[in-house]
Image 1 (cartoon, rainbow, N blue to C red):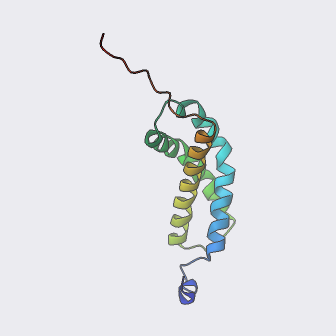
Image 2: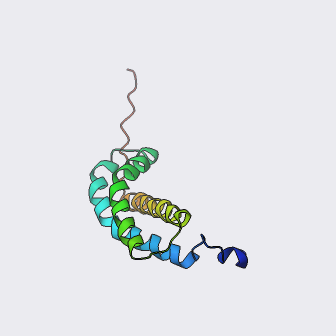
Image 3: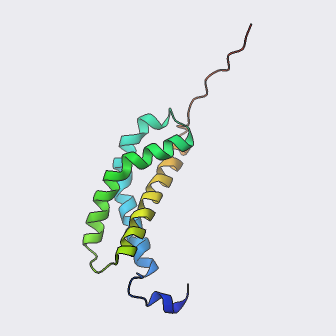
Length: 114
């Protein structure tokens, strides 16, 4: 990134954004996992992604408010960037955790005519 862009008033330093995103995602993971673990096994990856995103919304929003209230002076652009990145990180980590635990959908046996 260009150095002059870092001095713009609405542009927060990348390390601050990364720290806030990491903090929000870390504090949200266990609560989101408890909500989605039982159903992810029945879903394909795209359906699971949407399900996780929907079930994580309130949790990530709550942690977002807590984390950003401790860091005043962030622009609306930076706040929306942090919220989106935190949600993406939570969804990505939940999908990789489900894959790691082999919670992928069980394939039904193919039925063939006699």
